[in-house]
Length: 48
Image (cartoon, rainbow, N blue to C red):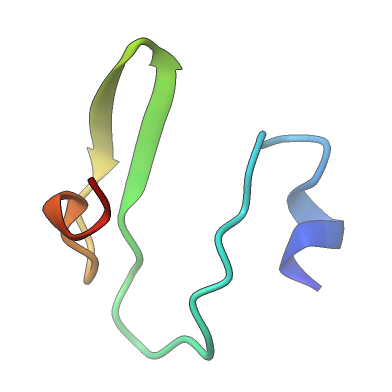
């Protein structure tokens, strides 16, 4: 459902399982280097 809602707005959606009450981390990858737009429950270092 998330992909269907945002597919025309974002380039990629990563399936991370069921959410919780804490916000997710939002990362901008459009300029070559990653920029954290919102730090949430996920740590960027976990995915690099």
